[in-house]
Image (cartoon, rainbow, N blue to C red; front, side):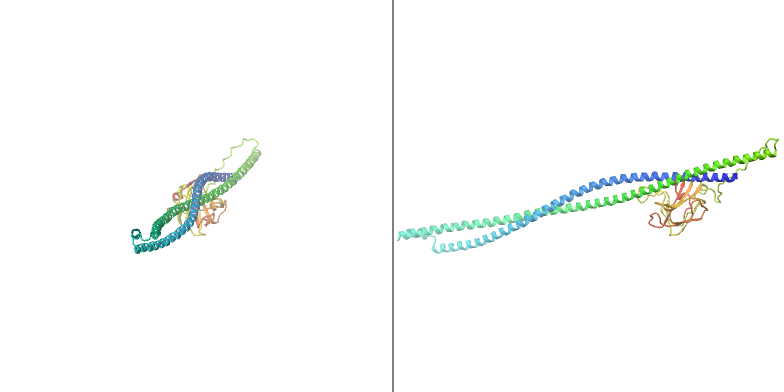
Length: 426
C-alpha cells in the first residue's frame, strides 16, 4: 500500500515538473510574441509615415499636372483663336497681293501712256503757245496725272510693306505658339512620369502596410492562443497541486492508521516487552529505464522522425524576417508516419494556431521533442511511447503551404538545434 502511494506521489511530481516546463516554454513564446507585436507596430507606424509623405508628394504632382492640363487647354483655345487670326491675316495678305497686282497693272498703263505722250509734252505746249487757254487746261491735266501716278506708286509701296509685315507677324505667332506648346508638353510628360513613380511607391507602401497589418493580426491571434494554453497549464498545475495535497493528506492518514494498528498489534502480542525496532522499507524508483540510455546520453545518435529533406534550418529567418526558426522543417509526403525519436510520455496532443496538429513528448530531465503541422495524431496525452513508435502522420495543418513536419527539441524550455541530436543524414 505504501509503495502504491509513493508511486502516485512521484507520478504527480513528475507531471507537475512537466507542466512547469511547459508553462515556462509558453511564457517564453508569449514574451517573443509580444516583442514581435511591438516590432510590427513600430514598422507599421514607419510605413504609415512614409505612405503619408508619398501621398502628399503624389497630391502635389497630380495638382501640378491638373494645372498644366488647364494651361494646355487654354493654349489650345488660344491656338484656335490665333489660327482664326492667321486666316484673317492670310485673307488680307491675299487681298493685298491682288491689290498689288491691280496697282501694278495701273502703273504699267500710266507708264505706257506717259511713254507714248513723251516726257517733253508740257514743255512743248509751253513753247508753242498757240492756244493759251488750251495750254492751261492741258498743263492742269498733266499735273493731275503726275500726282495720281505718284500716289499710286506710294500706295503700291505701302501695300508691299504691309504684306511683308503680315508675313513676319504670321511667322512670329506660329513660332511662339509652337515653342509654348512644346514646353508645356515636355513638362507634362515629365510630371506624368513622376506621377507614375509616386503612384507605384504609394501602391508598394499600401501593399506592405496590408501585409504588416495581417502579420500583426496573426501574431496577436497567436499570442491569444498561447495565453489560453498558459492559462490551461496553470489551471492544470493548480488542480494537480490540490490533488497532490489531498493525496498526501490521505497518505499521511493511512500511514498514521497503519502505525496505530501496528502499535496495537505489537502491544497485544507483547504486552510486557519493549517494542522491537522494525526493519526499514526498501528504496524504490519509478524512473523508466531506456535501452538506449537517457536522452542526454544519446546526443548525436537519435534517429530523425521522418525521412525527407530539410527545407528550413534551425535559426534561419522565417518569412516575416523578424523571427527565426526554433526548430527545423522537414519536407515529406502527406500521410507519412512520424516516429518518436526517443521513448517518453506524450504531454500534449492537440491543434495549436501556427503549428496545426501538434504533439509534444517528454523524455525526462527537462527534454521535450515537438512535432507540428501533422495530418493526424496517433497518440494522446499520457501515452507512453517508445523509440521509433509512430505517433502522428505528416500533413500541412496550421496554414503550411506544403506537406512538411515541424520538428523541434527543447532543453529545459530553451530551443536547441535538432541536428546536434539526430544522426547525420546520408
